[in-house]
Length: 196
Image (cartoon, rainbow, N blue to C red; front, side, top):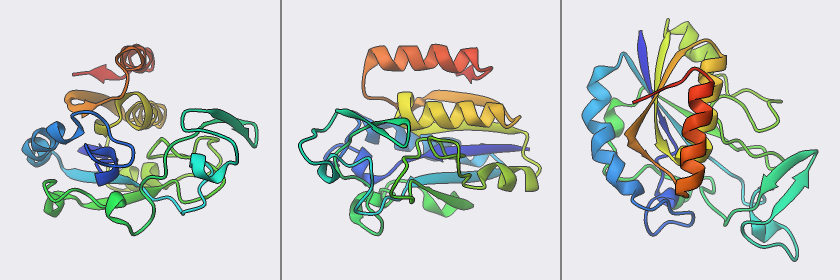
């Protein structure tokens, strides 16, 4: 059984959004086109409270892009994005939501970020995505979405570590920085992930 994991295709990560990924909107049609090939379609959403630790606005005298230590974990500071129940946290109208079987919310704990759809960045809390997939007899997971070198990479690596045969479909992903994308593709390959 095969699942499609759509990672963080939300308004704030699309052009014009608070944390836009260049050409992020161009993957939506590709994702819609492949949904019928899967037994199960799951989508993750960043779902941050306003006082989230990852927002530069919540750190005095710090700027977007700075790195701070929070509870022993390096935290990149981002613009406020995907705040719960805002337009920015919504799926775009162009994404075929009728085919999505389940939505997994992440990044809800104000004190820890969560790039992966499976665990927070300290691996202290699970979203229960792995358990859900296993309960549906899923053994293969294809990852798509935004952004390649952050949430897609960490979700794919955790998927592989959780025992799923994992692939990343690049025509359905976009990232922020070409060098980081190239490094993340290499890192994913080293973690037994097939890059399509």
